[in-house]
Image 1 (cartoon, one colour):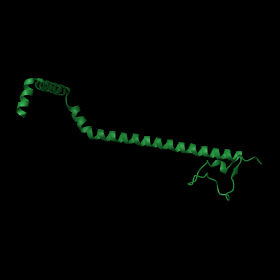
Image 2 (image 1 turned 45 degrees about the horizontal axis):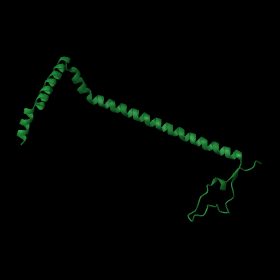
Image 3 (image 1 turned 45 degrees about the vertical axis):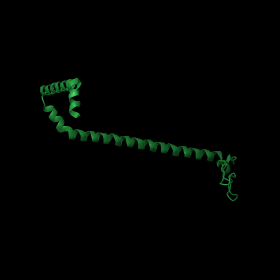
Image 4 (image 1 turned 60 degrees about the horizontal axis):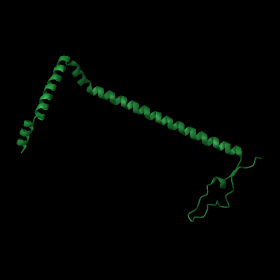
Length: 130
């Protein structure tokens, strides 16, 4: 029979109880002795469980990403469905009207800037507010 390499007391780290005394297992608990083969088998089993947990975690992450992708596609589809009438209305406006509208806005913007930048306008506004 192979010689035991570890015992239960050697597997338990040096613990202290609430009185500060070192932990000692009770006398009535038999010592657990395992062989190298048993220790290897236990290590392989632990490694297998850890690999399975990693695989399950990776599958969960992939499912979460897939759900997030589908939700974003659905929300984008809802956005396009809601805005379809608006986009159709914009498409029906001729390019010349769109250009004229832009030109009108430039004219209004430049007039606004001229009024706001002139000192006379600022003085008139301040006199009205007082």
